[in-house]
Image (cartoon, helix red, strand yellow):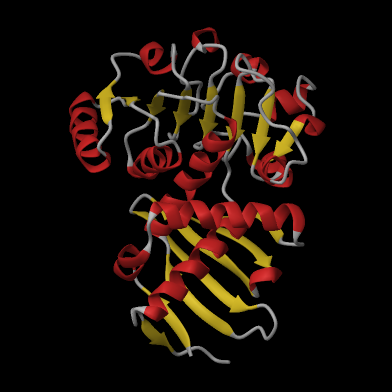
Length: 320
């Protein structure tokens, strides 16, 4: 019988190292093993939107989808897993925490692959729910990271957020005084916001910086300016097909011809050595993160396996 995992069940077993390993395996499978990923589809109503990501990891015998609704009252996430060989339902997983961790893990993996060696400082835009996973992933993937500047609009909230995360992650995490302080002289810059206009001036970027842009997944959202994108010698995406549909930071340049799809490199190609990645210490690199079904499926499957070992969750009466 299928297993249902609640948010509390997921939290009991899911760690950032597990998330990093799952996201890496998903991208390797997408690059080499015939995995399939379908870009996000949306159904819009005046008050609520339904989002669906679907895919398959044949090597792991899993096929499935993540469905979530967004509304002024919040967002609600569920991952559905099926056995690829039989089509039998395997699990339904509440995926708010899971999604936050896998989003952060994608940026952590990209930073490990693309940031220049010896990276010590980072700047993060955003101090919300997703920023928690982003910070934890950076600290886990890059043990040498020492100081992280965080910027958000609400200073009181920002101060409390930095204090909490510093205690949780045992790194120096400080409120940035300005956008320029969050960007200038940083080895890594991350954007985890819902911004509709660019967050910083491209001229503030220091040669050698790696950027993780995780907030812009539609044309209405934009965290980076065209000038910033133009400064990036290497532009990496989780999936070219998905980026061409919803990467708000890249679409304006793609539409005007200042950027072409052939310039986009998939993260899996960096992992497998098909593309060399960073070319030198002065190169500015960008990872444009949209989120993929295969990331969710790979992580949910690992979480379900651990939950079964620990006898967590409840049986879910689905037709088989």
